Image (cartoon, rainbow, N blue to C red; front, side, top):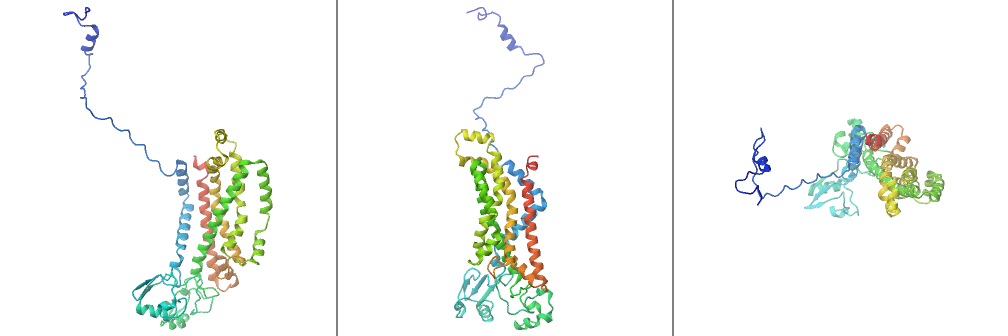
Length: 410
């Protein structure tokens, strides 16, 4: 026992320091010790589906009001045209006949189903219409004509003007045939008919769908082939690049139009025949763009690091280089789609496109040229093609601005 622990000895100086509070100090109440568990760490914030870079690109795309609205309008028109059979058709959408539900717009019913004897039912004949009305009802599309419907009861000779341009005196004969008195009692042709009595508005709807589908398929497949060819050229370089370049120079010099004319003499031109021929040459457009991107990026530090880590060439090309090259590809896609639609329209106008009778904007434009007195034919084809291509151009400019690095990283 030392002198600080003896009874009656003064406390140690440390005890005085602890026992005597400092002047002006306030007592702090101590919290009672509890068995509460520590609070769990907050969950990390959720990340969106888009990366910050892509979100900025989407914002830039929306800021371009003209391009953004054009894209929405074009998309809406294309989606509507996909259901063309439910909008313009010479068959009812739904029929209730003797307690049975029939869908003529999707299923071909023989005429014997309605008391006839033909293999295919013509729902526009008075006998079939009367039979359905007496034993049920039918829901017709807004436009009771398909793209190939032949109208035999026109108020004026073919090509007939739009019905809203006619007078009741001109419609009197056609209206009396159906028990009416004027233009309001006959089926209307909102954009008139062509020189073979087919409804122009129905052909515009179907022709718009075919043109866009042709352009989308052609642009998508040719982009895939062009990206692969350009990636191989740019990544490997050397003799591979040199050989591909000489081949592309020769292949791109073949006149596509003359080749289509020669093939059309041996094979009947059709949708897939034209698509296959155009695919043989359309992929060349993207090769130079993708090749330049791969040539520029193949010697970057991250590519050298990937090679040093032992990654395969295919993985480096697809995972590390392709996303950077796709920026230029996506920028060109709307313009490639525009060119594809223009090509099909031009071939149809010249008579080397889709088979005769197919709904085509180019064929409608050719009819307008051959029938200058029928102004509605040429004006309808002109305004539809001009509006469609303008919407695509405005959308393409918005996409180009969205991927512009000067705006994305500003």
